[in-house]
Image 1 (cartoon, rainbow, N blue to C red):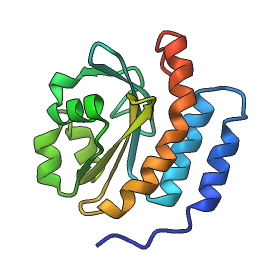
Image 2 (tube, helix red, strand yellow):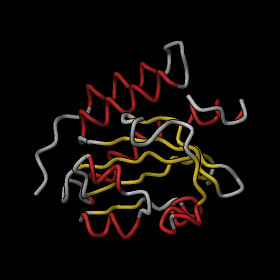
Image 3 (tube, rainbow, N blue to C red):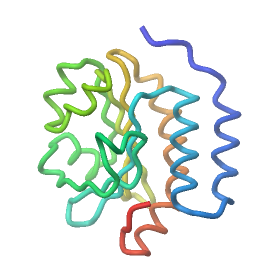
Length: 171
């Protein structure tokens, strides 16, 4: 059973204002991670930019010791990620066993006590630019969380466009 979620509006307002701050895209990614922590909660938050060749690069991590910025993987290494990248469908994982089956690199998340995940696409003009990945205790996320997390994740669009224009340099 998930915990009651707080009112998301204060976190959403702070996230919107973060777009005006210097130090982009890191300022926006940090604000997004904090807003999601407040609105739905997470133990692990990573943000990845997607490239046209099917590769994804981690550009933000709240646990860089387990998931460092700059880490890359191909969609072929995580078949469920391919569905998210190609069709923009979020991934919702509720149980630790499903998490282990879905992610070859699950050890770091498991070490943090994560047993559920929500991978949310960030889309622009019908194309997936990247994704926001949240992980928490088993059973933490539900379908009811998807619309809110998707709305928050969309605030990353300008950051992804900035990174793409700069050649994908990690934040």
